[in-house]
Amino acid sequence: MKKFSCGFEVTKEVIGGKWKGLVLYFLMNGPKRTSELKRIIPNITQKMLIQTLRELEASGLVSRKMYNQVPPKVEYSSTELGESLKPILQELCQWGGYYAEQEYAEGEYEIVQPEQLS
Image: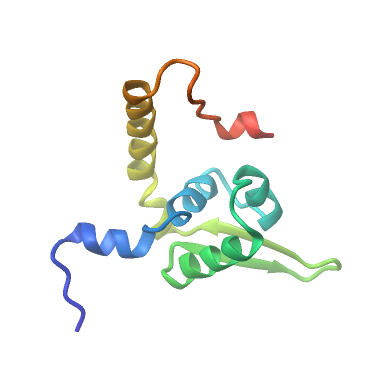
């Protein structure tokens, strides 16, 4: 039996780490291929992206759809359970913007919105 000190600890186990929350956040706007996610999150390696997607899939937060075509096409999307995190992830993004405004001088940071990355 796994014991947790609070619900936050469970949440941290499921979406904690450097990339899980970010990948899940970008899947909230619809299905994405790995190449799209890599373009949106350029600092993640291909290996880490695949590992992160597999972990999110194993947790039931992301689903993987493989198309029967050549070349192979795979899309990832957030599940209903993953979508339940949407308001929380949006709040964390807003808080991050607030924090950046408080802690960094003007011109020292930039938060690029997904639509600006296209």
